[in-house]
Length: 294
Image (cartoon, rainbow, N blue to C red):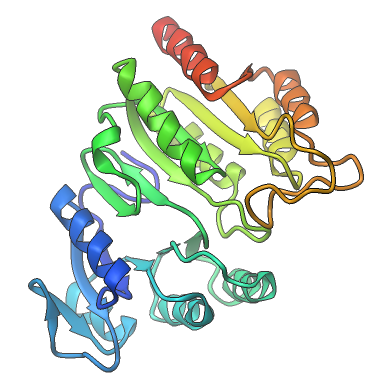
C-alpha cells in the first residue's frame, strides 16, 4: 500500500507537449510511471514519443482510465488546468508549476473543496510525489530514493525533499512515499493530509517531516501528531537564522509579527514528541535511530 499513488497509477500530463512537460514526462515514464496521455487542444491526435495527445483531460481520462494528472503548464494557465482536471473527475492533481498568484491558488483551492471534494490537489509550486520503485510524478530524481520503506517523507521545501531522500538512501533506509507539498501560501495538500495517510498506511512505520519558516502549518501538524499519531516522527525546520519580516525563498516563507519562526515551530514539534534535528543531516541521523529501534 502507498499513499496517493502506487505502481498501478495511470497519469495524464497536462503540458506534455511543452519542453519541461516532455522532459519530465518521459523521465517519469522511463522510471516506470504509467504516463498514459498528454493534453493539448491544438495537438490532439498527435503523440509525444508514443504517448497519445488528447484535446482535454475528459477525453484522455475516458480513453485511458487515468485517475491522476500532472500539470506542467505555465502559471497563467494553471487555474484553468486544475479546474479542467477536477471537472473531468480526476482524483489526484499534481501541480508542479511555480509562480501561480496566491489569489488564483485560493480560488481553485476553494473551488475544489466546495465543488469537487473528492479531488486531492498537490501543489502548486511543488516537486511532486514519488513512491520509490513504483511511481514518480513530478521533478524528483528517482535515483536518489531507495524503495522498500519503512519511512514516509513530507516536506514543504523542494530542495530539502531531495536531501531527505538522499540522506536516507546513504543510510540504506527505504521510503514508502515522499510528498513535496510546496511552500506557497495556499497549498492544495497539507502536512496533516499526508500525516493522516502515513498513519493509516501499514507499510509506513515512521515519518520524516521537513518544515520551514512562515505560516502555522508546522504548529498545526504538531497538534495533529500529538493527538492522533502513533508512529514516530523526526523533523527539521529550515530558516533558523532568517530575520523577521524578510521573505526567504518564496511567498510562503515569511516571518511576521514574531509568528512563523523556526524556533517556535521546533518547540511545538518537540512538545508533540517529535525528534527535531538542528540541520538536515542530524534529522537523517535521528530517523536512522528511529528505524533501528522499530
